[in-house]
Amino acid sequence: MSTAFGTLPDRLRERVPELGIDLDTWTRRMMRWHFDPETGSPFWVARREKLGFDPVEDIGGFADLDRFGLFDKAELRAANARDLRPRGYHDRPFRVFETGGTTGTPCRIVNVTRLAYDVEIYRTVLEARGVAGGDVLAMTPSGPHAYGHFVEGLADSWRGAVHAIDFDPRWVKAAMRSGGEADGYTAHLIDQTRALLAAERPSLLFTTSRLLVELAMRLPRPLYTYGIRAVCTGGTSCTAAEAEFLREEHLPDVQWIDTYGNTLVGHALQADAVPGGPTGPGGTGHSYHLPPPFAVLTVVDPADPWREVEVGQRGRVRATTLLEDLFLPNLLERDSAVRTGPHPWFPWDGVAAVRPFLDPGAAEEAVEGVY
Image 1 (cartoon, rainbow, N blue to C red):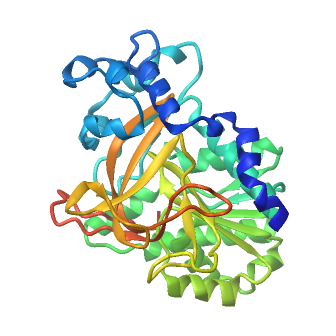
Image 2: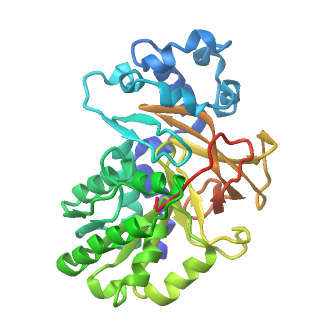
């Protein structure tokens, strides 16, 4: 295990060569791609003349992206999906994904290359942990949600079967916004999952932390007895107490691999705690690292989104996504986190102790539901 993780950065760059490109170099490449009328999307090309600067000529590196200001999600919500597809990919198939609607009306994005990158990166991490391969139980949203499609792509990469449950996370959020509760729908999801666990004996379980807690409480015996070797979670946050409870009581002999992220920024990869590593009070002992140059997480002062906090301090998460099929500069996330330094597995800054950011100026309160 230590040998595999010691070479993980090199292995990631070998499998995904773009991860070896300098962030400033990649930033300049993305400016040329997104703002050239021949390759860029109508969404960004139409904005070039209104920016007050030339992104191709004036953006010399990642730090210069501050000139875009904070990105307004309302623009993404109002965009037509075809206007988001880069013209350089006009001859390639694409998919439209949507966010879960945690903070209001869902946002749409298009996928041409991003999902393939995510699959290759995550599979490499699973291989380093010794749990890649086998059949998968996907206790995850499907339909327009990227998570379910990502799990299918991952299993396809080793020709595994995916046993998926019927899961619409927006139903729960709509019920909660109208004063209802999530218990009935959660029970519906758990019942589907228990039936598949008993019948199919999958090797990997993908779900959210919130649902993992509920599933563990309702199973008659530990997960490993069903054949599960690893549980991979994302989406909703998990408290330190819940994490300790799950590891000690319900996940013996099962690896738990968590990620932090969402549809717009991708998967920040879990790194186990190291001696002296700052994860902050209230954390689960892990830090999460988003691979540059595809995306960068910055922890900033909530009162000044352009001032990065020091390592070990808590702030609000600001994200920038730099992909051929998705460019989002300086998006303030709905999360707060502790900034951590680089990790031996992932040699770039990360975040830890992630929890919802309480924004007094938000137009609508965030509703996490079960995802």
